[in-house]
Amino acid sequence: MTEDRHKKAQFETEALVHLDALFGLALRLTGGDAARSEDLVQDAILKAYRAWDDFRLGTNCRAWLMTILRNTFINEFRSQQRRPSAVEFDEVADRSVFAEVAEEDPAGGFFERLIDDEVIAAIDDLPEEFRIPVVLSDLEGLSYQEVSEIMGIPVGTVKSRLFRARKRLQAKLHSFAREMGYVS
Amino acid sequence: MPTDAPMIACEEAVARVYEYLDGELDAEWSERVRYHVEVCRKCYPYFNFERIFLDHVRSQHIAPEHSDRLERRIREALRNEDAASA
Image 1: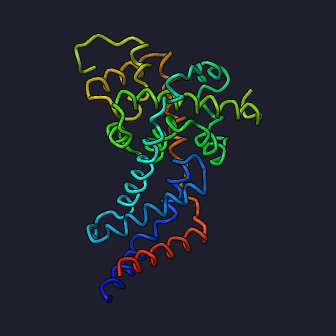
Image 2: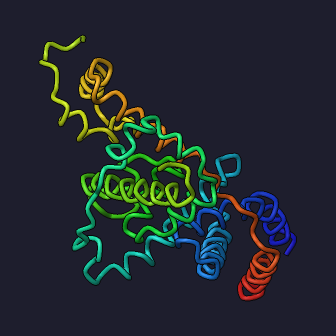
Image 3: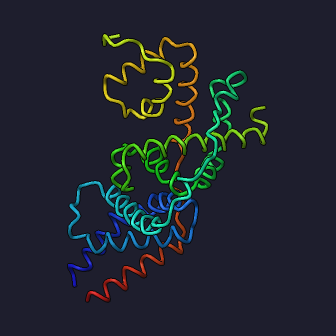
């Protein structure tokens, strides 16, 4: 019993302090779905608690928890992905934002004028197949190889999804900047 | 340019823009793209634009505060877990 209490106290000190980071990652993976994110964080925390004896203190607890959460989400994502992906048939033209702004704003000054919430909303709005690589690569800083292993898709597919996701994101941010009058 | 290979075309550089900016190219290709961008009047502003875009996306903070409700829920779940394994 004392050992259990010790385990719980240790878990609370080491793991529960990372709830903000876990919730933040869950929100981005789910596209801003707070209820689904809370479920995801709870699932990940329970898995971590059950495996706590296998976790080596002194190693990076935050990274370990983020991996559990990511894997939990991806497993759920993969089981939903059995049906044909909308993305494969998506013919949205990847218009070049740079070509449109090259004369007026070649250094992309309008990006700086957008606030974090607007960028986050644009990421959340991406279809899941595009959003996940952006979150893992750009927000979490993982390599193509790591994204490929996590998502269970070839590295070449990671590249093309990232390419198309970023072009979409750019187009969305540009449209928004135009609406706001940050760029004409 | 340290390699004897001829300079790559704009299309070859542009096709690798994200791999280059993500640091995902091997040393040889990275150097070929770097050299091209350095001397190409058309590609330099484009690569600069894409770099600014990526830097901006990467600077987003993704750790909003979780709610008290979530923390209560999790502590409750941990108690239930302890009770079940006791």
